[in-house]
Length: 335
Length: 76
Image 1 (cartoon, rainbow over the protein chains, first blue to last red):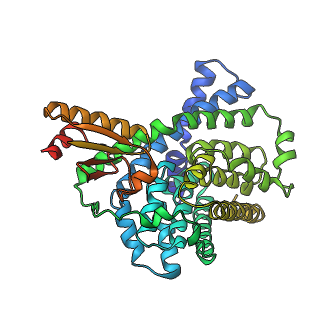
Image 2: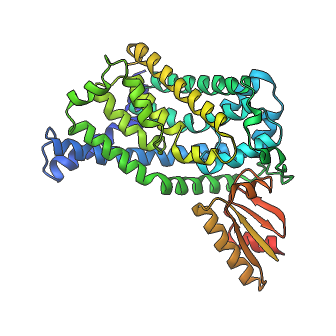
Image 3: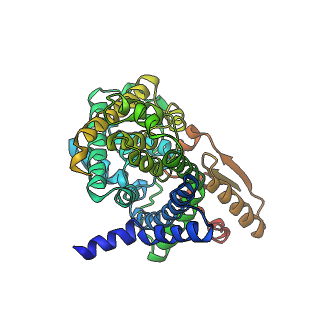
């Protein structure tokens, strides 16, 4: 158990890196670690390096697993399930399938034109950006395993129920007509490739994602460092404090239009929690930023009509707010 | 010969288009390279992952950036 704790501290929390950066900032740069600048510089350097190490390792591992599940195979697997089982499978597959807002529309069209119910497609679309292996390990690294697993469980429940609700509302008529008329390609990408191709694919994914998100990570860590050392705690708790019932709603509404991925939002959530913001509020902010964003909504608008789009946004937003409130109440169990 | 690159304009699509141009050039083929960025049009090919490569109307690859050498092999 002690060994496991040590492993957790060194590998996930990267205590060694924190110590090393302390040495650099205190002795190398001659800064006072208890000063604002010293603290900010330490937070920034340590978090940026930590996130990039975790990002590289995790994206590699996930992409390797992903190479077994190209969208065509995912669609085949989902087509074989019925009822809630299909929603659960969709939510689970969403956690291991690549996601960037530029791929959501072809997936939506490909799933829908092949006859998958909207309920299943939306379970997949909600879970995909929200929950993945990277978010679990990152949450475990910054907070702890209890929080990480709770986040996954809650994300999956939101995906299953959100999708089921959209299915139950029978909004098929709110999908643009061309979607149903789109052909289903006979090109079969069934994922039978060699191990070296999988490794190559995983390596390429790391480069591509690092390329895409590095700016968001720097901005996220910068905001995190600012919250951590510069913004007075009173201001933050006055707006987002644990005793403020509206904190979750403010965090959600602020996060929804933003576009960033989990790597960019975690440092902000981390800094908020350290400043006395409720865990549920911080996680809510993360979920809102990753699950919904203005660019993805604009793209989704091309394939669904407004009522369905608004229903989707409303269900996910309300779901996230509800989750935040529940986690805030249950937070003492996790911290 | 007509080569289409399907994708919403992300970096990968640009890379794939460049590789396709190189492949066609080194094979001495006069190929017309066309970028299809409209989602509705892309959906018309029934594919789910971009970038995708279409040679003379046939989808030959989806979801990856093929190298010039790989594209050359497909052109033959």
